Length: 490
Image 1 (cartoon, helix red, strand yellow):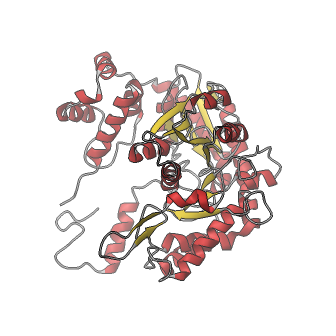
Image 2 (image 1 turned 30 degrees about the vertical axis):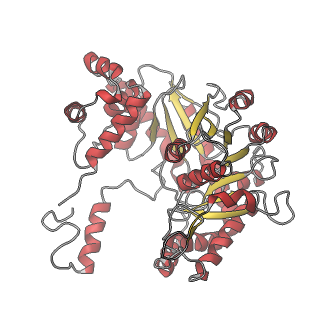
């Protein structure tokens, strides 16, 4: 624990060894980032020595500043190499139908998506109320981009069976004010690939940009295709696709945070830049949101790609594909559970058809057994589900997961579904975000075991309450609950 009498800024400096011991002690409470038991947030290839290489590369460039590429040409060279690798993998570059692809390295998928929206918006200065069309299965970062950039968001529903948007619905949502249409390859929640070619075609017919969010799948789908998987067209080989995002800190297995945003040509990228000279300091020119950027993550990503190479990524994709198949079989073997979608990429997503099997309790039981999964709340006719992000490191654990899932399901049935007091459910169902008071929030949080410090080990009651809440109230409650966790230590 952090020394509460001195905090992060003691009167006298603390020896380096003790500081590192403190950090290691704090890290002991974290979810395991290696070992194949965490199915969200981190991406572990299980490759010996890769962490050490990435850490060494990170240290070499940690103090290099991406603010000025003329001062630090090493960083510029590595960025250009990463962009070139991503472009080549995703159907761009010399000898392709998209020979002039350009790109930028960002801090993560959210920044890439915000910049894709910014470039589309700023390319249409004639519009006072620009809009973007996004399937409801599109990443929440598009809603964040719309909020930050004051762009209207037009959501398109997805079919409850296929989990994809109908192309006709996408076309109908496009208006004269639409600046960007979005498709996912795949969607994060369910791991299914949108009909990219058809969506890009209706966008192009309307004269609108089309962004493919391949943050999750951009570094896996090309390798799976090489292995024989029936991956539909989704990249720059598709006419009408104007930009693509791909996260290198996901399935390129680079340390966080590194993403690449690609545009089909320099003209499409130009509005992404911010330049300002109307002040007495240096002229600011930024291709991305941040000005100062550490070279550490970029160097670590460069080292990772160089070390693994195409043969390494192909091998990791094959291992991951087999792990996905094994996990899907484990779900099929448990009565009452079913796959929400047949796996198309590196996601296994399942739900429960048995009313006596509470998914949120199941997630808690898996956590108690050392398996960390990601619960997803019911939404717009789609049932609650459990999301598994599958990486190569999961493969050695697949044989263990099936019995653990069966054991957790049995324990969840024995425990029964979470039952919240009827008056609490009625309150949550009738409240508006504006009606929340500090006292009411504090009372709800206390009743759920939330407060200063780490979240409780079991979250089924919290998830059940959030699922009962209307979407806008759900958002406010989550923000308030997280705010309770984030308090300064003095």
